[in-house]
Length: 185
Image (cartoon, rainbow, N blue to C red; front, side):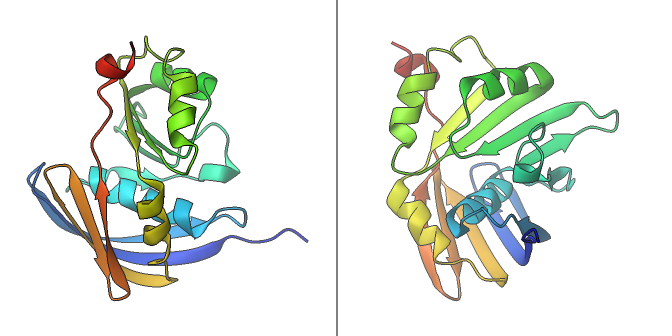
């Protein structure tokens, strides 16, 4: 018998001073049986950092579907405007996504994120629509500790720092995209 996904419900209150966006979003996310709390919370953080008032950013089937990212934003014609990945995707997947979407965003996390980037950066250098964030491992592990089946998260962003808080604690994360021109050499 196959294991089933676990449903998580989150109320995400976003105050993003960098983008000038303030809003609340009620989201329901299925956590794949092989997914960790850390990955789930990074997906929720990615949602908060790219959410806007049109609610066009949606969670996909993620791990259950190899041709879909963790999140995406599509226009009314089905054109993919934003493709958001979490984890350490291989360069073939990233290049394919860059060909399909207007913008591809990666939230890399874990102890090997720096080594992953060193290995793929030269191979994806020609992808001008790729934006990469490397989240600190200790911060994403602390973020995982905030995971609950039902949760309210407050995400405040200012000067490329996100403060994520809930009734169970708070975490500060640097969310500066890599300067790919500076890291390519």
